[in-house]
Amino acid sequence: MNTYLVVGSNYISQSEILASKLSAKVLDIHRKIFPDGELYVRIKEPEKIRGKVVIVANTLYPRQNDSLVETLLLIDAVRHNNPSKIILLIPYIAYSRQDKIFLPGEPISAEVVLKTLSHIGGDCLITIDIHSPKSLNSFNGIAENILVSDILVEKALRYVEKPIILAPDKGAIGRAKYAAEKHGLEYDYLVKQRDRITGEITMIPREITVENRDVIIVDDIISTGGTIVTAAKLMLKQGARRVVLATSHGLFIGNALEKIKASGIVKLLIANTLGTKPNDPLIEVVDVTHRIADAITKLIGKSG
Ligand code: R5P
Image 1 (cartoon, rainbow, N blue to C red):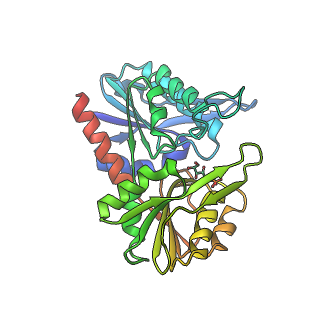
Image 2: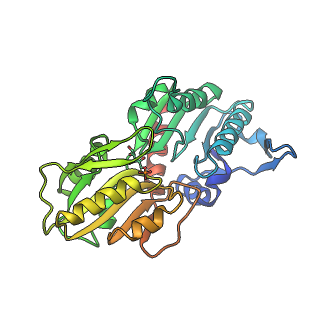
């Protein structure tokens, strides 16, 4: 065995599928929580990883802060056992939306997380649809952002005909363009504004005609659902026939799911990037593990 997987709590349920696609072995981890709430991890057979490629896999939702600390502890435990390379697989990177200073006095949280991951010992990083790909410049090593909007749109095409692909804001245009071009579809974006203090969202339609057309709205994250629900309602108000949502990371905070269900959409597709799995007939969870496995295989091949 040349490749090992060291897996954090949020990624356990997906690790065996990935391991079988990579012909890798998942190492047993002893984990516990000390009485004061601190985390403890120990790789049970650390001698196995000397000179080997080790993939440290975890995703940073739910329990973002604990998951981040657990991931850092796992990376450090691996590093002390002299692997040939540490590849980090973190499908969802928490704090990625604070990717710049919006108001004076704020930190750049995305930069803090990415710098820390590489500083502790990650040589390469693979993530899925990070909020702003530019943030990956803070990772000191090879960092690859995998888009999955094309996979989600392919599944969404079962519910709509000749749709237009829409991003709910200009910043999301990259993932709309990627999916649209793969499937030979039109794409565009809406103009979104969010009040940095109240969080309230307003959206201004551009010169797009959606009347009697099907629409697929693609985005990176559903958190409170505000963005995607505002976009869906606007499209339906403008005469769209059917609206389907395709989003990489479905967090569904608070009553997000209720709001989405009430918005009039036909289907919601999300990728399996988190440690949570919603169970609702409106939602289809799409497995993107094959794309992760391909990216890791290429990375191992490239870097030897
Ligand atoms: C923002 O720019 C992101 O791309 C998402 O649209 C946003 O973070 C989703 O958050 P919420 O669901 O709370 O509107």
